[in-house]
Length: 315
Picture 1 (cartoon, rainbow, N blue to C red):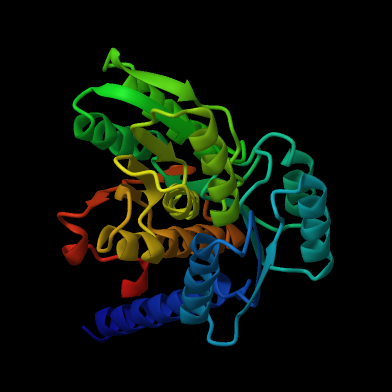
Picture 2 (tube, rainbow, N blue to C red):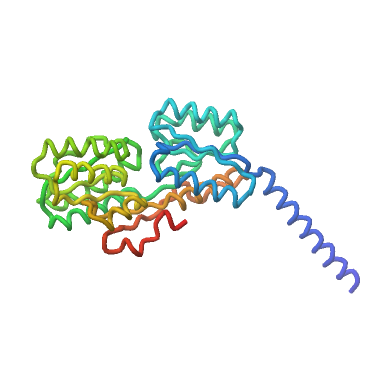
């Protein structure tokens, strides 16, 4: 009986030691510093990405620091930023790639230095994982709503943007849905609204000057939608339905006020960044993600449901 008790005691002690050792092993690489490079910190979406990452990092380690920089969709600038992160010995990099394929050498260089790279919002060749919205579905939702609002006929613009994977996917999703309505004519789909309010306004002013009859516009993000609405107001044009992607705070305001914006397929940059940090932290400590591609489902936010929408500001 005594031997059995001793055996149980030794087993219990062994388990405790193993558990402590396991904790120590898991904590071998503490999270101290994250480097984030995004398309533009002038876009509230990417500001929310940075804040979401910081909140998650500090939940893991209250002393963790996050450095977020704006690449301004400039590939060479982003290469330099990643070099700077490597020199600073960051623990992980969250990357919103300016060019999904061309960024690969920088990704490989960071990984060679022992730094995990998690792509956020858009794909990046060679990244350890990618966390993004299902952008094809986002484009489908926004343009299905647009087509229905127009009764399946009319002149439509697809206001494009920087040619990153997220934008390309949204436009492809939109085109696939609009193709189901033979009465809808796409007047233009290749102009870059720069992903910004000013860019969207500039593009829309050009459209309104060129096309006296315009019924609907799909913009690839909310800043462009807001800019497009401002352009229409400036030229006293009405009866145009604008839809977009993001579900940003500005669009919540637009949907509840006198604007041409009718709907936006939402993203969750906060949740996206938090998931990316969790995956990066796992990779730091030898845990590869079960699925390297994580897609978050968008939801359509309209004038009818915007008051019940739990948007970015809910965090």
